[in-house]
Image 1 (cartoon, rainbow, N blue to C red):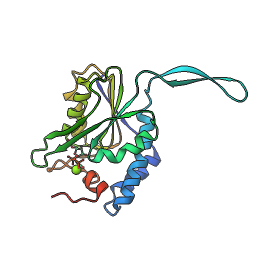
Image 2 (image 1 turned 180 degrees about the vertical axis):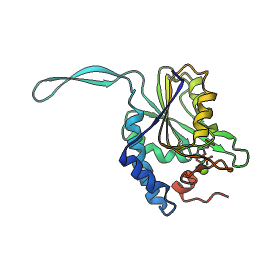
Image 3 (image 1 turned 30 degrees about the vertical axis):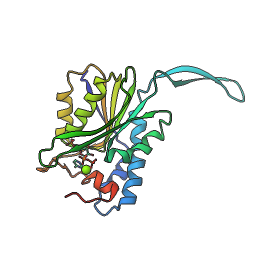
Image 4 (image 1 turned 90 degrees about the vertical axis):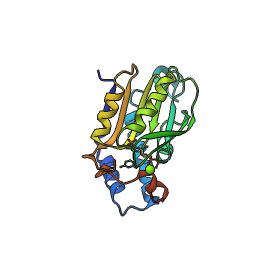
Length: 217
Ligand SMILES: O=P(O)(O)OC[C@H]1O[C@H](OP(=O)(O)OP(=O)(O)O)[C@H](O)[C@@H]1O
Ligand SMILES: O=c1cc[nH]c(=O)[nH]1
Ligand SMILES: [Mg+2]
């Protein structure tokens, strides 16, 4: 089994929301709330392998068999800045998760990612981790973020991305083939390609700018 598995969520609600998100006419407030809704739908798929153990509860009528989360608390890590726009949508489904932060930025000339902030637990042994980053373009950002979580002992890493480029998916699979923990990418779509500026085509533009109303130089 490859270390990195890819899950494209095929659902009309996801496809509809993504279409409006892509639309250049969609304003920032609408973009933000749609991204939030879309993440919650992706989170449903991303948490499919959440560890649970059997338990029982007493209903008003009888004893019922059920499950409860097991193992150490989940860790949710938005990759600043744009990943912050995905945090509420994710923790809506995982309210008991701990939240860590990674600040990363891609140099738009070299397309190399660098890390400017790290606020994570030192040890992640046994913990299921969820990385939030809307755009998987060249893959440089995600590769560095996943490696960092793996080095700290994460039991698994699931990256939730709104959009991915085929080049980025291939780069992540190649770069992380040596890892011995399960890595998954859950996304709403894999687009056609990257353009000469490293942007996803057709994509949705710069996710951070569209979420926060800024304009890239
Ligand atoms: O796959 P890659 O080629 O590494 O590119 C993807 C990264 O680029 C964007 O972040 P950006 O650097 O624009 O930072 P921002 O979130 O602060 O806008 C995006 O949110 C990803 O983190
Ligand atoms: O298409 C892209 C590529 C990188 N970052 C973005 O925000 N959009
Ligand atoms: Mg940006």
